[in-house]
Length: 112
Image (spheres, one colour):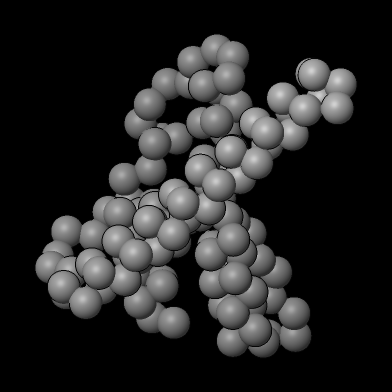
């Protein structure tokens, strides 16, 4: 759990919400969402469960991926292979879904 805290402190050290002025429209909403961050309540002084909940929220919100992108140190070749395979599978699933949706839309347009 210490590594998570270290990553968070380095991430919030160069926070965009304190340095950049907010623009209007969609960009402003995006900036506000980035500034909000993740909040977790600690019940009955149970810090371990709060940290576990925070880690789950970070994983689901994509902050963990953003932190990993910011890493500047060496990534092992085995990890690179795993990431490349996952990216390939994700892309293939996306292309397959797009192809299926296109076929469905063509059928609907033609009235079949």
